[in-house]
Image 1 (cartoon, rainbow, N blue to C red):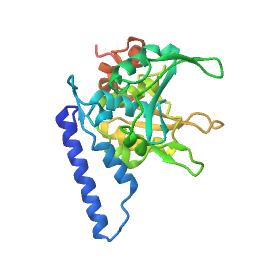
Image 2: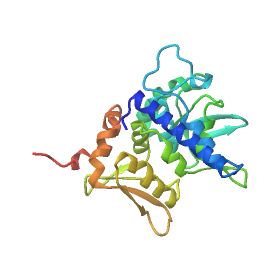
Image 3: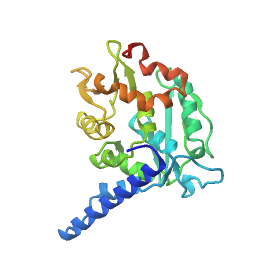
Length: 274
């Protein structure tokens, strides 16, 4: 599937049909309870996404559309280091990176500028270990609730935990900004071949395997889940060298918008055709 507006609209229509068929199936089987994951993902993927936003278009917080860039940056950030902060019925996205990645933070802020109309620009903070970061928040509101419902689960202790589900990964559009932002967040190039790793430490091994077998597969990208260290119990995703070139083709135009991130394209180990 391409990344044009028409493709996204076709995808959204197909997804709605799929959901309606599943709901009808549940009704025929006389099941009164429709899975909540089905409902929450319908809300997420039923959002209107536009490749370009015109001046005067309503903000997402006012019921307007997300641009392709806004949607991709939000989802890619949630796959990576970003988190949603909930207070009452209002939700906002927090973006926080090392001061060394300040260009990346400012790029995200520009991409999400329509979602930051009532908030401060990125500011420098110092964490408990003395490291400096650059952070900003989007405007609070209910417009991010579909993302909250799709990415988070309320646990018994009253806290929300980020998670990946099959429904989410099967339903997400093939938006190149999702892959590009995720890779710039958590990707690292290998020094022994033309390939890379995704540090998916925030998700379980099983969730990472779902990401590989569903979302990456839909892109035609191969990967495997490997152990970081036995002691840590953490895992990461190895992007296969066989399809890493295709992965780079998808994200390269976006990564090159941030010169400080171009090293992640691993050009020194790119196979030559001559």
